[in-house]
Length: 146
Image 1: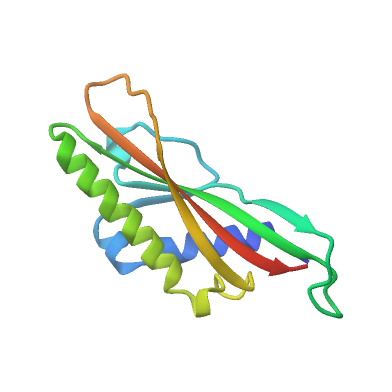
Image 2 (image 1 turned 135 degrees about the vertical axis):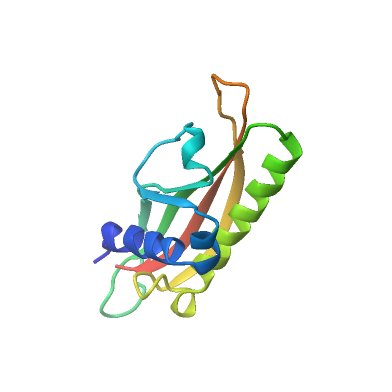
């Protein structure tokens, strides 16, 4: 059976233990919302995965094929420079994808069969201050037999 908690824990662990992200003081949280606090930038939030189960036989023991989508919010804030904030967001997004791909055979530490890919969408965030706040939602797409 599919354990959503195990999948999100694996994603969180891969990101939170990545040496590049750790050295840049990236704040990594699970199941949190957008955080507009300037003290928590750069910020990565691993959201709760959604799952779509298809009723076709994957193999003789596992009668279902499931596709799992997990949104990961990458967010940076910069107080003075719009271009610098965008550059930092690109580096953070690349770091998150690199960290996830560093796992065992793209299987999120064995919690899924394979990571199929990612989508990256910019997120519009309304900010009460004059700071430059940018975010991307990286959606990880994986396949797992259930």
